[in-house]
Image (cartoon, rainbow, N blue to C red; front, top):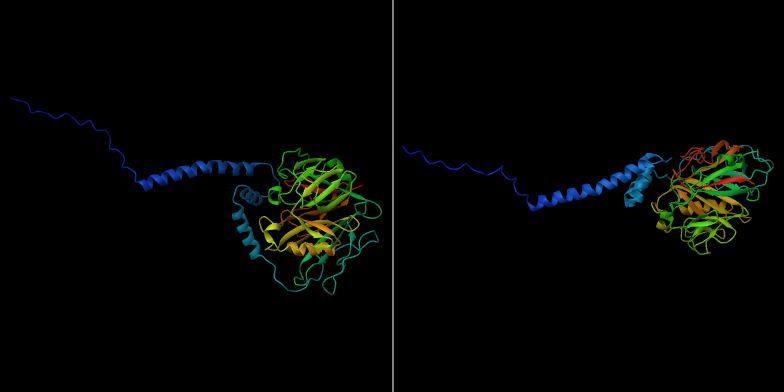
Amino acid sequence: MELAATRPASRRGPPLPPRLSPLRRVRRVMALALFMCAVPIAASYVTTMLGPSNSSFMIRSFEWLRDHGAAQIASTIEGLYYSLNAPSRGGPPLRRLPIQAKTPVQTLHPADIAALISPALPHEGVWVPTEAWSGGNSPVQIAQFRSDPSYPQMVAGVAWIDTKRAYVQLYPGRLEPSVTLSRGPMEVPPDRRARLLATFNSGFKLADSGGGFAMGGRTYAPLKDGLATFIGYADGRVDVRAWTGGPDLAPGMQYARQDLPLIVSGGRPNPNLSDGPQWGATLGNAIRVWRSGVGVDAAGNLVYAAADNQTVGSLAQILIRAGAVRAMQLDINSYWVTFISYGRSGAGVPSSLLPAMTRGPYRYLSPDDRDFFAVYLR
C-alpha cells in the first residue's frame, strides 16, 4: 500500500504587526521628539527648584518661565491677577496712616510733605527719625502720605537719607546680577551690622532692563549711555543720573547700577512715562502694581519711595513731592519691593517702611537672591 504524500510543514513565523499609517507614524515621531525635548526642560526646572534660594516656589516658577522663553505666559497670568485685583477709585477715606508714626523730633530733615487730601491725617507727610542710637540727627527719616486724591486709601512710604552722615553700599545677590563675579555674603555682613541704618531693593534683572552693573571699581556688565544709574563714589558720595560715561566706570567711582531711563529729571517727570513697555518687561505701565524708586534731592541726599497700586507716572509724582530732582524706577511687584530701617544698633528692631510690604523685615540679614543696597552710619 502506498503511503499518502505529506505536505512539508509551514515555516512562516509569527504574523508581522500591521503596517503603520503615515499619520500614525508622524504622531509617534512627534511624541518621541517632544519627549526628548521635555527631558532637558524638566531637568532644568527641577534643578532650579532644588537650588538654594530664599524666594517662594511660585516666584521661582514664574522666574524660570521668564528665563526660558515663556515670559509671555508668565506676564499674561500676572496681568490677569493684577487686573482682577485692581484698586477702585473713591471709597471711604482713611482714618489713620498704616503705621502710627512716633511724635516728630526736631532734627535735620527736609520740609514736611504737604497733604494732598484735606483734612490731613495725624503726622501725614511729617518726617520722623527711624532710630535714636546714631546720636544727634538721625540720618534716615521716613514719612507717609496719601498720594492720589482719586484713591484716598492709597498710602505712599518715602525715606530721606542724609548722605553727609550715611553712606550706601551695593551688594550682589545669589542670582542677580546674572554675571560672573565674587558674590560675597549676599546679605548684610554680620561684622558691618553695628552701623546699619537701612536696606532697600535694587532694580530689574539685567536681562529685563538691558542695563549695566559695576562694583568694587570693576565693570561686570557694560554700562549703557542714557540709562538711569545709581552711582556710588569712592569718597562715599552717591548720585542718580543718566549715564554718559561709556561702558566702564570712571575713576573715583566704586559702583554703578542701571535700570531703565530716568523717571524724574530736573524736578519734572519724564514725558515718556506713558510708554508702557519701557517701564516693565512683564507688565509695562498698563497695570497698577507695587513700585519703588530712588532719587536725589537738590542737596544730593537720597530719596526712596514705594507704594502699592502705582503706575510709573504716579511713582514719579511721589518722588517729586518728596523732594527728588532726579530719580529712577527700581524693582516692581510686591515680592521685590522692600525698604527696612533698624531701630537699634546691630540691625536690631527692623521694621518695614510700609506694613503691607510682602517680604519680612529680616530680609537681607540672610542670603538673598537679588542685589540690594545697605545704608550705614558714617
